[in-house]
Image (cartoon, rainbow, N blue to C red; front, side, top):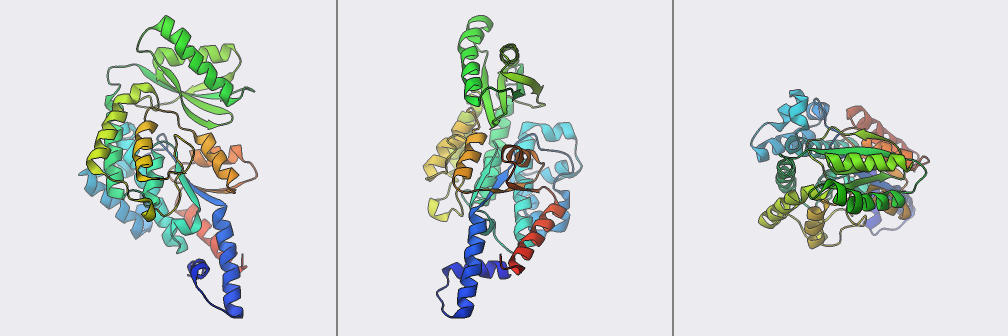
Length: 370
């Protein structure tokens, strides 16, 4: 396609009027690319039927579903397309299912546009388990190894709290800053929870999703206590209990973190940085990964630590991003970006129609010479 040739012209030594026109178009394509980030959703976006349109429309997407089924040794695709919602929501199923749909949607986007993801986007990142989607698309880990790690992650997260009452709640903040609320939750954990509720009770900030939303995670009593205090101090307007099968990103997940560390040690899945296709932003540091050792360490730490989504978006904004490609399934990460940055362009690439629409936009831009 002309778009792909234009990008290639950036690296092609040539001369003459036509070469200058080619180079100008390519520079403009590169400019748009540098403004774009590809973002992937995490758990909670799963719904029966997701990805079926991709499977039926794009051979490259179908291949992703088939490869995942083969790696897992059972038809996860059948559970996604026509299964039971409760079974799909189980962490051990939901996590590989979400990543499968995200990667399949990216392959569909590449087919529809004639461009690789790294030719359209300068950065990528994913929310929680969505970070694996970003790592796979960026060539940091293979689809096969990524799915093996995700299955271990999901199973061990679910097993970590089999005998516990737990909760996760999304809190909408009032005028308080995120830093104020995080400090207050930390205070609650180390005073009221520790002194009054007893050992083993935990509440932590699991996700900092935006300047107006955080998610609390931990044991049920501790989360309820924290919400009560935040309401009483008028730091949070309301809290919404999340239907999850484990309390993610808190210290109750430490056994799962250890299980993932062991599995990473067995598989050695991370490729060297010279093979990476684009920068991936870490949930833990809100900065790009630099080395294979970084990836291995931070994926383990991510399991029982806070997802720094707001800081990650802010890092990308500081580096010129103002166009966001929010991949399937669902619209959660796209909604977070559009609410935080109302003037930015957010493309919700959640189904076949949206992917075709974006491909048409790129074609029109090329025809106008960008």
